[in-house]
Amino acid sequence: MFKNHHKNRSVAAVLAFSGTLTISGLHKFYLGQPLWGVIYVLLSWTPIPKVASAIEGVWFLAQDEDTFDRNFNLGKSAKMTASQTAGQQVSSIAEALRELEALRQDGLITEYEFEQKRRQLLEHI
Image (cartoon, rainbow, N blue to C red; front, side, top):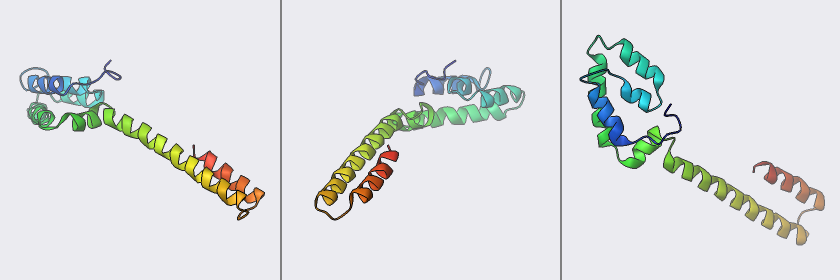
């Protein structure tokens, strides 16, 4: 239900704290952890999920937004980092291809060696 939905740290904390008074585990369903949500519901006759919910509510509030996003929003910043890493990889391969071309033009490697290395580099994209 909430799989692709942006999770809010405050909502998660409120749901966790509400689990100390009502049904525990709602915050787990909200955060896309349904197995843990079911476990909390099944153990609701014990104090364990209520205590865990309270601890997690405090933990959510203690985290900064970036840490929360990294943990529960598939890394909003991690997505940016992944695309930046991919861009850096392409840039470094492009630079390696330019250097390889310079070596070929200077006669330091053969056409065959150039083509082999070029294919190896392009396989990494």
